[in-house]
Amino acid sequence: MALALAAFAASACASAQAAMPTEVGIRIHYSRFEPSTVEVQAGVPITFTIVNDDPIDHEWLIGDSNFHDRHRTGTEAVHGDRPDEVSLPPMSIKRTTLTFPPGTYLYICHFPGHEAYGMVGTLVAKG
Amino acid sequence: MRRFIAGAAAIVAALVVSTQPAAACAGLIGPNGAVNLLRTTTFAGYHDGIEHYVTAFKFQGGSGQFGSLVPLPGVPTSVEKGGDWTLQRLIRETEIAKFSVRGAIPLAAPAADAVVLMQVKIDALDITVLSGGGESVGRWATEHGFRLPPDAPEILDFYAARSPIFMAAIFDADAAKAKGQQIGDGTPVHITIPTANPWVPLRILATGKNAAARVDADVYLLTDRKPLLLPAPFANGMELQYSQTASASLLNDLRSDKGMDWVPEMAWLTKIGINAAASQLTYDLAISANGKVPSRVAAGLEAPANPTTPATNSPSNQPLALVGIAILGLGAVLLLGRFAPRSVAP
Image 1 (spheres, each protein chain N blue to C red):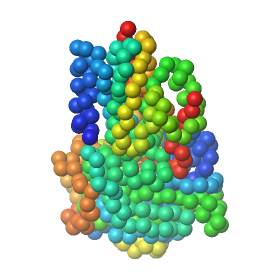
Image 2 (image 1 turned 135 degrees about the vertical axis):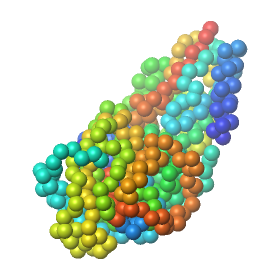
Image 3 (image 1 turned 90 degrees about the horizontal axis):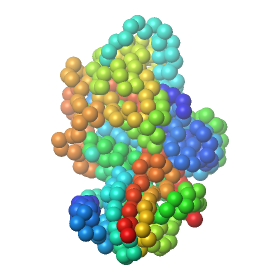
Image 4 (image 1 turned 45 degrees about the vertical axis):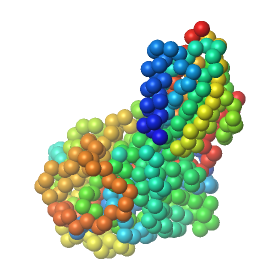
């Protein structure tokens, strides 16, 4: 699964340089997002396949600074199926589809200590 | 965080318990997921190819369950309650002796489930010995309700590549209180491990800590003769604090404690102080007492050519010149708290 995802992620990155991808693979390994930067076309539905290769819980939350400020102090144990809030149990795969207005967004794992450890990625939606 | 103290050889993991994650040094897991270890004492001795770990888990009050994961160099043949005074006696010996030290003497795809090799209950401690890769052991811990810090996946793989054996110790504070344990009371655990490749886990001490956080530990080694160490305790936060022939009185006292009749007639006692930033602890301590250069793989300085597989290790009879090594004190601990794994909410 890890290799497949890595290949998928690499493919997404490569294609991002040529044409904006509509599908993006993100792997979580050793509590890091791979890739940590993604560029997509604004206003187009983007489907993310997120693979948690770690034996611990993670989450993939994407949004602006206000969104992340709220989550840093949140108390919810597990997220539901909101498209921008994905909970990832150990060794799991989730898919979600989002459409972004132009701008820069961060995807972060807000489990205690995870953001500080480096579980932060950047998504740029270009208009 | 206070200093660990390990006995003549040792891994130490102290487990302490508190159900109040916000308490500064009282809990293993702080509100930010940091792992706080309290002072722990561990002794590891090596003699005739058998490593003996005696680690104490101290009751610090509170309620709930907390635990630790300790990487082990091999499959234990027994896990039992340790003696009553071994750890204390070692501490006393070196505290007195430190004033007589002269000069600086140098000195690893989705995996199968973890296999439970042994389960033992000692007082308020539930101990489980596991065989598995980093992923499977981490999954086992997660499935058992514990929260591992974010660096745990990499750290578990690091250790599993050399030895797929881990010991999970879960301390039940409520059970401790029910048994009448007072805060500060320790539960010594004696682990007997046949192995040809003793090492002391240091890197795991930094698990869950910020890069700049300090790690303090005392590592005691008891070997047949003066050991060679890798890395040499000159830099990276290590300091050789004691290196002398173990006194007869110490050895006699140790030998008279429960389960300690293996202590040899003569041995060399070494104490290494660890005072390092968490980011410095990227290695373990490899020990050789047979005159050969210690293994870089055992020291964590390079990956093994052939990573171990999660199968039970057979007791090794590879001759080591260590008579008794005591590896010590350290402890490796990955900690866990039985909490809901996260806190987020809009």
